[in-house]
Amino acid sequence: MKIDILSLFPRMFQGVFDESIIKRAIDEEKISINIVNFRDYSKDPHNKVDDTPYGGGAGMVLTCQPIFDCVNDLKTPDSKVILLTPSGIPYKQEKVYELSKEKHLIIICGHYEGFDERIRTIVDEEISIGDYVLTGGEIASMILVDSVARVLPGVITEESHKEDSFNNNLLDYPTYTKPREYNGLEVPEVLLSGDHKKIEEYRRNEAIKKTKEIRPDLLGDD
Ligand code: ADE
Image (cartoon, rainbow, N blue to C red):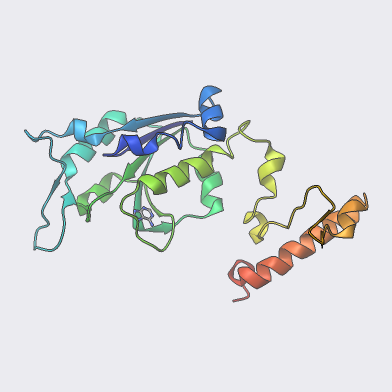
């Protein structure tokens, strides 16, 4: 999968994509990530990318020209263009799997007070990573890329993500590792039993219990 991220702050991505599982996925050519500074596309003599809002109001608004030209330059018939904005559709695990099937994502990170409404006309999807407002789309794009990269074939084993929280509308079951007892806290006996059927049953019941308690909305119980 190829991903182009349009951002005015390319250095923000250093570290996040240079470590751990994402780095390995890049090194093994499962994913290629390109950070594009759309300021480079500005036709303004001072490379401006924003301006004051028509009608007045606070802050600066991203202008159409640099983003339109940048997307035009990168876009192919295989591209899906995503705009990250708090007013987008809430991002869910289902969407992670859907996006992981795409060949090429172009992700636009908004910044400042917002963007010219006409930018919406060149976008396939608008996504929000949650009901809160960030200073820009950069961190949101890292979350999107991280979540998509980990479910690409061969990045982590399918077994590692098929029982993730949110698959089957359930939160993940609790897990334990050695030692059997720590500071008086015991590992549930059933996990030491070797009885796979019982273990599976225990995990499912625990997942349901946890989901009912913390996220009843996932079960349609709220
Ligand atoms: N940019 C600012 N806040 C955001 C959010 N919650 N989701 C996506 N992009 C954003």
